[in-house]
Every structure is written in C-alpha cells, then in structure tokens.
Image (tube, rainbow, N blue to C red; front, side, top):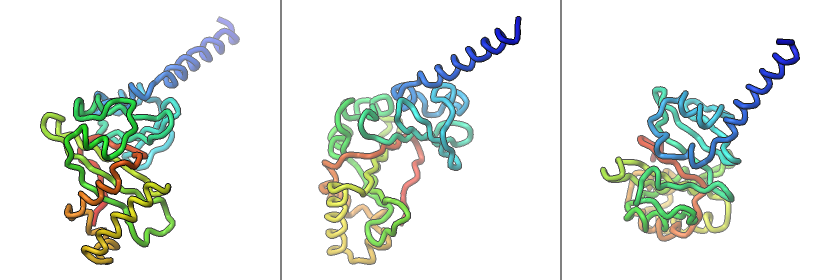
Length: 220
C-alpha cells in the first residue's frame, strides 16, 4: 500500500472515531444506566472530557455541558446545565418520581411528581462577594423504591426571579432568626425554613441538576 493510501486509511479511521464520539446524545449520556459504570466505558460513550477538576470531568454532548463525578474509577453522579435545547429527562434515574419529560423543571414541578421532601441550601445569601455567582439548591433524598437516589436542583442567583426568591427567603430567616443566622449559612443545617424557601422558589427555573449518591452540598 502506498504512503498516500496509508495516510488516507488512517485519516478515515480517525474521522470515524471522531464521528462516533460526536454521535453521542444527551439521552445516552445523562442517563441513570450510566451511574456506577466504569470511567472508561462512560468515556467510550460520552467522548473525551473538555475539562477536568479533580474527580469532576466536563463533557460537551449535543451542545450541552454534562459533568461526571468519578469516584474509585466509577461514575458516582451526573450533572447537567439546563437551558434551551439542554433539558434533562430524570425518568431514567428515578422513574415515576420524575416530572414528565419536556416539562420546564422547577422545584415545584419536581416536588409535585416526587411527593415532596426538598431540603433547601445555599452557597450564601448575604455578603457573597464577587468571586462567583452563588446558587440555591433543593435536595431530594429518594426512598428505597427510587434506589435512595439523590437529586439536587440548582438555581443560580443571577436573574430577577431567582434573586427575588432568594431575597424573600433571606428576609424571612433574618426576621425569624437574625442576620448572623443567614450570614453564617446556618440554614444549611437547619430545616425550619424549607417551607418558606419552597414557596419562594417553587416556580423558578432550575439552571442545573445533579443526580447520584453522596452528593456534595454546602455546609453551615
């Protein structure tokens, strides 16, 4: 075989591999069946990560950012940024506890389908600084029937609805428990104000969702 045809064959193989990686779909990658799989198997479907931060690896799939957290060589959790065409189908993870696919994901919609039990946490609500946009999280710890799966809904505090909801929650806690309670994020370890948080955030669009076991959450 001539050098030309050898080069052409190699180029074709590389093109096929690249096409295979690009052919992955969000439905295939952000899927409950991927939890617990070997990292090499996951990457054979999702492709090569664009960035890695410790145990977290970010993949670009159909224009959507999906992050896999790898513990001991296996996928422990999956996270997806939502918006536009990037919408999550939670049914493959938690079955009938999930809201209908294609529905805008909000804490209220999730609580209606799952039966409730959301715990609300936040990076901060007061004196957050400018290092990064803070987020509020609604955490669901599933029952045995859902494999004890954990779902964390994230709302980044950048737009009007999210900021208004955070302000309502903050004001209520400040009046009831004092400024230090809010500044020190003690609400992350105190479930007294979850109902007020849910009332404030129930109709706010979720900006990212993380699903798995042993999810990392903000402390107090």
